[in-house]
Image 1 (cartoon, rainbow, N blue to C red):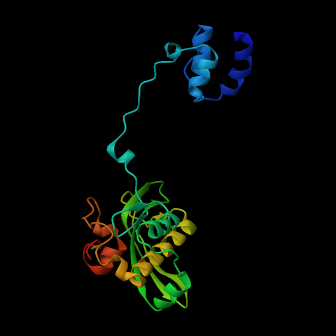
Image 2 (image 1 turned 120 degrees about the horizontal axis):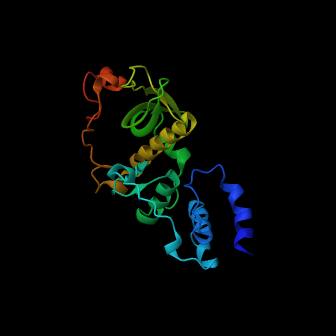
Image 3 (image 1 turned 180 degrees about the vertical axis):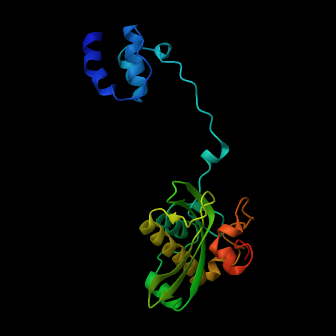
Length: 224
């Protein structure tokens, strides 16, 4: 296919993309289009090397942008993004072959458990933020887990109550965190050598005047 034929098929697709003005040189033009479509390997197929790529300055990454907030922490300090990964870890590292969840829930019947967690929030004023010190109370009742209360956080921009994002996903996550705590209690002998899930350092920037949990306790809610 000729250079003109390649451009004829590629250019219309990128008319609505935010790319710089295409170079006049045909080979550089093709390389620029492929680059912004994240198809750099195709350059080799077209006989083009990296010298034809546009000179794009790299964005600076903050240290926080690379930070991963894990959702589940085992008492042995291992970290996981899903409850399934945590259950697999119990089998591989703690010799708990099969977790009998109905029996575990029955053993915790009547327990009220407070959960601290990280989540994203949105305010009606448009401000979006996240916190590593969100709080919720849940209760185990008749082999099921009920959400008793989610403590709200106020928006620092306007002072109104912010909403938790993805409420259904959050509710599922909170119930899985309760199951994790019940598992530790049920198999306590397996975890006696471990002191806790992870360290409880005071969260910098957490404003007690904007946190319902802090105000209800009349102190910093991150304390044990």
